[in-house]
Image 1 (cartoon, each protein chain N blue to C red):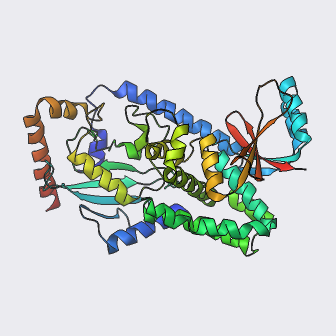
Image 2 (image 1 turned 180 degrees about the horizontal axis):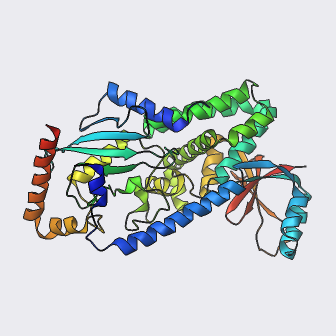
Image 3 (image 1 turned 120 degrees about the vertical axis):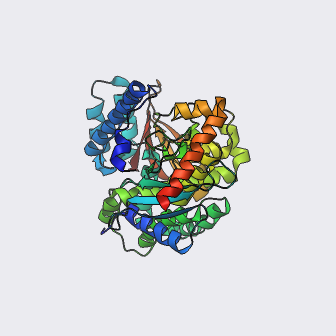
Length: 268
Length: 168
């Protein structure tokens, strides 16, 4: 039977109207995603913090106040695309950028990530695809270690969809691995009657799924990289509150959280 | 970069499947110049109604594979609650997270970047053996499967016979 005849076969189950509506909604969603991706690069250029935020919140007293507080501690911001991957992408960019100049941290990080693949295979991840993500990730890490990477090259690499997203996928897998390995502990933080594996399949491993505290705790613990998140919200404190992950760690990466989104911060 | 990562990964999988075939299906390209369009032949799983059949299906991979899932469509006529009458396969792991066109499915079974052609086909073969009749893609087939199993069996037997003839 030919392709065309099957395609042309009329539907007889009366679901047409319903399906068409859903398809329309999905198309619109895709369109919105495309508009976002056209307007905002995966990782943006470094911008002056105060100038950028003051302009954005010119008619918003609470946020203006917080922008001022933030600018007493940080002088630049780097935006990431709000595509659900922003925490992972911001984390990777900020830490890799640090490794370009901070050679002391490199060895420990390299040792952890280079053995991460075997740990994940042991947990039952399919080797075939895992290796593909791992190799792309390690290629970048090794280039940083060998000094064969400039700031500009890192920036370009993170704006190359293929490589940038592969790095995000691999960090998601490392996060999932940590959550599953220490499931007894992390189960306390998730709601519902989900198993940790189900949680990881729903909330961690799929691309474009937003991150929560639990992702940040697990990733920073798995890689032994301290993350300080500055929370900018409607709360009435004049200060932009900081949370360190894991608790008590020295932060190597600073991120700004505004409801639903993470960007990178640079200290003074 | 000369070739996108998705093409490289698909090429690697094709080579691997040719070298170490997996029981239950065979895989190749529809057109040797297009790595994104595959043709697979699924052997009806033993001890199921589909046993003995040879079901041809096409897999269309997006350029964003493996971040986004392929679409799968049976080219051989097949009567099954989770396969649309036009052949489209409605299996949850082929749906993206957030894609709620088939809202009945548990989100836990959505597409993940670690899936391969092999893991997809293993899921499809297990679906053949064990249909999910909650809010199915082929409502008539699901109804028959529940209420008139003899007729359901008869239709599938006809699929199997036809698929054998088409393969000759």
